[in-house]
Amino acid sequence: HHHIPTHIITIPHLPLTPNGKIDHTALNAIPLPRTQAEDGEWDAVQRAVAGIWAEAIGAGPRSLDDSFFALGGTSLAAMRVAAAVAATMRRQVTVGSVFTHQTFGAFAEHCRQAPVTRPGARVPLTARPRPTEGT
Image (cartoon, rainbow, N blue to C red; front, side, top):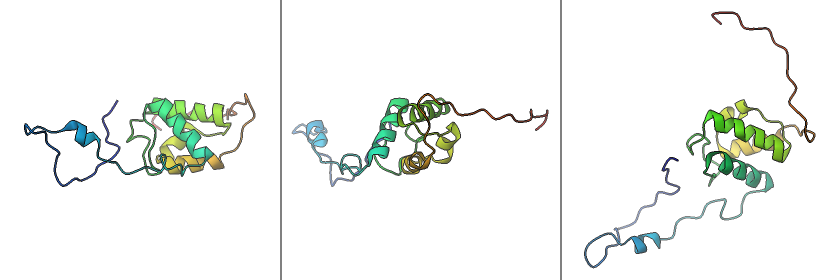
């Protein structure tokens, strides 16, 4: 997985040990700003989508502005997300909607407004003309 920092903070100086090396224990003790997820500001839909993202890409969002692809999402993971939303939330979303609603907040809102599906229902296939060569 990608090493993407969840927080970037500034501190006046690095804590040092008596030997002049970085004191990792003191560094880890610096409090980090709380996220919307940690503050419990998310509703049920947002919590469900966050769990689906975490399962699909191994990293859950920490704010409404987090991007699916910046967190390590791929087109294959987008297919997993769409399938999981349909299976667990019973909402009809497409793989394309993950691409058009890339931020967590936008995708969660899209899921909230997506049509509800029946249990076990499948998205209907639509007949379309076959593309011609060169198009």
